[in-house]
Image (cartoon, rainbow, N blue to C red; front, top):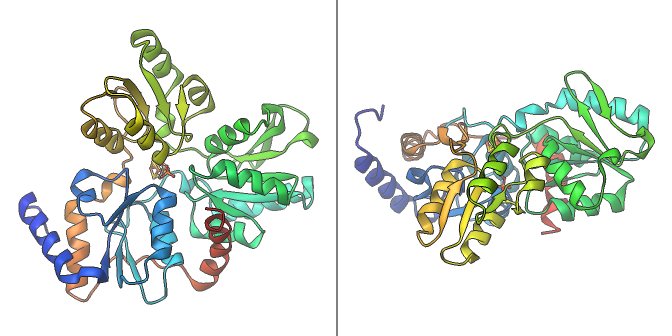
Length: 352
Ligand code: 13P
Ligand code: SF4
């Protein structure tokens, strides 16, 4: 439909609709979104910030979420029944969130209960489906993001002896390790083989990691880190904690999207950085800091293909559907799931 419409015209039409709708329209955009989309975002942030702004926004009738499906689900659960959340392209999913489905999780829980009794509290990264969040909420647990994972894991241990961390094993392992939990106190639940993998003694297990990963951040390797250290010894290496532990350990700094942005902002002019996170964000950071030498840790860059499905034509299509009174791609979570998932989300939001 927009194949023969120029970029300039699409931008004009988006601007016009934003003007016409005013406060009735709110566009949150994740940092990994393309520039052509992010230029129209009313709030730009990481997963935690976008969950917070969605929860605070009471005036917009339409929230056009420029991010991925689980983020739009979260926005729907944190806004009122009257507010409508749209995802410009329904195919914008998250391969990490898809690595834990609710049936696998229920089976895993049953088996882990047999082995460990009532000693486990589930925590889920927000990069998970609403059904997983509801499961976690129902069992007393909470959601976490990469910005508050340490705080939330510490809280979890005030509740129970052990945690089950879904669905990103790397964020779980990196966080647990920072908190002094050693490898032999961690086990990995394999949802395909339905077995618990561990190297120490099973009774010492404190953290059970779900065997999931982000296909974007797994592309940053130890070889990439070693190459930078050899070729650019003065370069600082900063990575997202969705990267493997060996990469995080070898890097100089690691932290959430927000942390990475802040670190580069505060860095001295002339300093050199290799960044291990999603391509659109790395390119934006490079553009915003011409006074610093910045490259991607992986020279091939690493785009999140699903984030990139939200482009200008899809944004315009979504906005025009509102104007026509027939909004497309509304994301709704059923009431019961939303109610239980909110328990998990609110336990996180209450703690900042
Ligand atoms: P944050 O926004 O929490 O840093 O997470 C990164 C990510 O992969 C989002 O999908
Ligand atoms: Fe999911 Fe990774 Fe893409 Fe984030 S970057 S949306 S975790 S696949």
